[in-house]
Image (cartoon, rainbow, N blue to C red; front, side, top):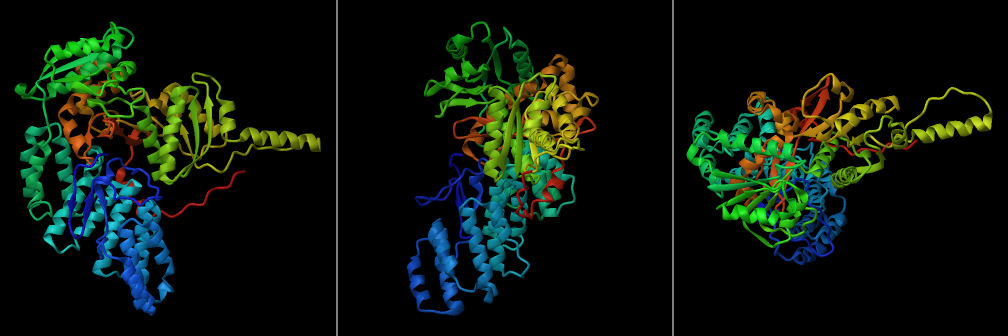
Length: 633
């Protein structure tokens, strides 16, 4: 995400851009997009501009604990500069650190920082667990590093909890206020559904206050009218809260910064032709959001343009919208039309497309790409599976471009997290028998082959039970509802019933049918808040007004978000930690002005998709022991 915000104090440095990395040091993108805005460094006990050679020379003349302390000082200077090689070399040279508990602890903290620079946050968390009583200075350094490690590992909730613990030991008011900013940015990464789940659990009063304030801010992204009053009520409820004095008072103003509401909007959709039903659903969702705003004076003038009659004339339609006075354009929907718009360096007015270009490696000024990108879902499946402790994946996808795209996206994220793709197979979509690809995926065909060879050698009949491969601990399945309902039960039939199976939202129709979906019971999957958020009265009310759209319910949600996103684009673009809690997901913008979705996690229970409880998931994250790879048969 692009750099846009920086606060520097003696204790905490909030960086939009990652620290400069010396030549030869490899870095990875953050696992949480935009989390580099929240890179929390430990307090620099020595300034990076100091000469480490001074301390190395002094250490050469010293001995014992004095020498070790001087070496630690020099190592920390190198680490402050992100110089991993020299930092590690000095840490390795410290002799017998266990003889002095203070030196041993400080060396362990320095090693954790080194691991974070190397982008190994889970390993750093292992080092940042102490049974000894730490000094105040050591506690502060550990809390900051743990917060950074949790964030880099993909756990913003745990990072925020750690920063709230840090608040309790900070003594300087200014340092606390800066820490409050860090807490707020980590909580801003969470969707409102997750925050609502947290609010239902027993929480420390300070944490409960932060969560409630974050919910208010998320709701204020759409319902601005009640934002200020809600903040006032919050201040009455939490008068002694760390955020009550300054932070909450500024929140209302910050929520409306960089928010622009165009007065005239043109919506370009293919109402004619094969995509007409989808276009109608998007339009109806757009209008549902439009009528949600009670103040008529806040509603823009809308113009709808049918791009389905001649899809190749997208530029004509675009300039028709401009000539109608549009200050903002929503659409087009067809991928080829979106790609056409990316062939220029700048568009006349801000434009939010409803699909993604085929290839675009440079941002186009005034162009934002938004849609239901399947790769986003595959990456979220990787997050869920890895966060539940799985590291060795088998992947089964349909033949064709769509399946390959999902497999690549899953593999990329799973390996970024530290997992490994062990095997991948494809199947023919719509088939009635999936035995061969499943047996190949699980190596059961090899088990049968060994059995037949043994029979040929011994010339005797023998009792035989096929044996599946043992080097995978999960399965990622990309499938439509029909195929998923047939494939999922066959895993159990082929001796893999204990392996958890994960899928994207494509395995679910979007309409609850517990009888039909019993076949995918226990399946873990990801989906949008529109489907999973327990607020049925809002959804049911809208679907009563537009009952014909239930079949295209996810595109209806796309239309809702397309309208609500328009005034938020400036904030999302300027603040990398910002997320918009939409109906299609937790939305953020990447450097190419593409909008991505972070989805909710669920599991089918008795044929019904059930939202996973974040409170139960977070209990397993504080200690992440290394796992041994299971052996192949």
